[in-house]
Length: 66
Image 1: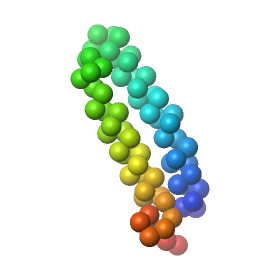
Image 2 (image 1 turned 60 degrees about the horizontal axis):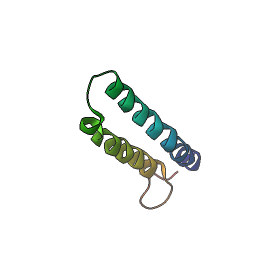
Image 3 (image 1 turned 30 degrees about the vertical axis):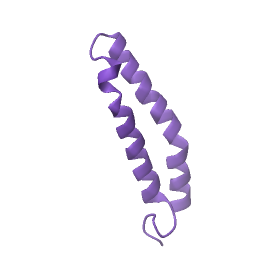
Image 4 (image 1 turned 180 degrees about the vertical axis):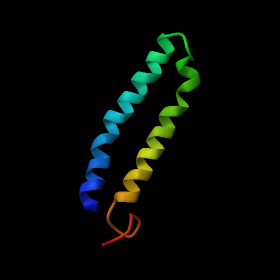
């Protein structure tokens, strides 16, 4: 189960990052906030995704073993 979850976490990293960037550009185009004010959110999303991958990764630094 852990290896499947780790692979899923790696597989969804790209689409989630693209969705985040798309939302930020949409907010910029709508006149809400400038993209240059909201770009740190991309770094936060990447960090959260890496934490999720690390949690589900099998091995000594990953999550709990069965």
